[in-house]
Length: 295
Ligand code: SF4
Ligand code: SF4
Image (cartoon, rainbow, N blue to C red; front, side, top):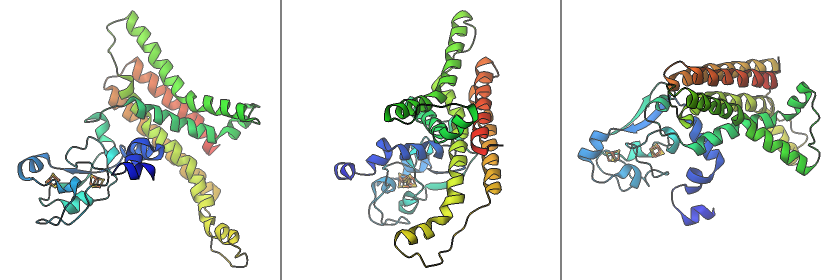
């Protein structure tokens, strides 16, 4: 509320909100995009109603303009577009198009890699491991000091940071090798790390599938009982746990396969660094399978 009072156009969602950051990250993998044709925008337009807003003009409708203040002809990726279609309604020149595309195509074409996005991505992966702390303790026979605030904070911090550790260690190893063998190709870790994005998306989706399909359908009875309507036969719906496990497994498999493919695409050529990061993807995929699907 404070940021909305001080700044216009979703300042909080765009720059500060971690959930907005997560949505923006995962939107890069989308099969759809909304873009305007730069030729029409620069040759025919003088009003820029798509992002500024304004009264109805030609075929364009009266709108307040893009809620994120994004120009649809200058979007490099889906991060700053919430597909609200305001620009499509506002444009008087039919320049804006809603397109189907290969999922995540911008990641190997127009994309600008950002270190803070990569940090958030690994943090989101760490959050899945953190949610699965009881399973980690049970499977590995650990008894972590999580009963005190300090102990729990320390364990949480380690789990949140840990998923970035292996890819970074591989990168450090590769740089050492490059120092020793200068003929090895130089790589930008920040750019290549986006190869993990499908895996992180799938891990989060697989984790929350259980909540959505087992607990989500009980919202009405729980709400009714909380409000004191205990006698009402509230409808509820729950998926069979086997169905949930199956969907979680399929989601994780899809995430691993897409990550392997995307990492290959970003690295372009086969080599030590690509195989290292793909091996790391397989290790994370297997560990997440054990923690989430549990078969
Ligand atoms: S999208 Fe439409 S309104 Fe926006 S700059 Fe292009 S032609 Fe103008
Ligand atoms: S669809 Fe909405 S958020 Fe995306 S560029 Fe158009 S107006 Fe902005």
